[in-house]
Image (cartoon, rainbow over all chains, first blue to last red; front, side):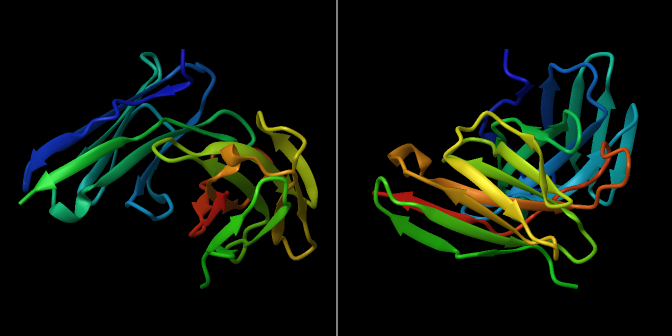
Length: 110
Length: 116
């Protein structure tokens, strides 16, 4: 079993819709979770971090964490074509070592 | 405020050669982590440097080595290059208080290494 799993996609949504990206992880002791956005040919950009169960909102982005289910999600409201990118879920497994999923490719059509 | 910087941007080497990649962390950060990202994959942790010492290491052979300088900048060295070492090499910086659990890591632009 992979440590961090994501659906590779592509996830296609129309402009203005809500995009929902999901991630599961295997290390029950993990305490911090991150979402990065990566445009083609660029490096990952941190967009959200979450440490406690529940929701955390930042602008159009909402991260959701459920440690009992070992599940993290990212919601993007009012999706824009500029949101089209690969979204990487990362889990801190201790001393800032991040373990990444393979990423979900999001396509937002005008 | 300068972000994380890396050099060079691109590099082409042949099998068996050695390469050195460089990273300067974000201002105020003292920890540097290196990751390798193959095409279509997520970044894979290579190692991390804090206080000029390697603090953690991922599942990479000894051909991969590094160094951190007193100004917190870091180098990644790869010896005896293989075709499979072709990838995007990413440096991430963070600030490491005692717990080290909740620190956000910020990536540089990366170095694209091609091994022929």
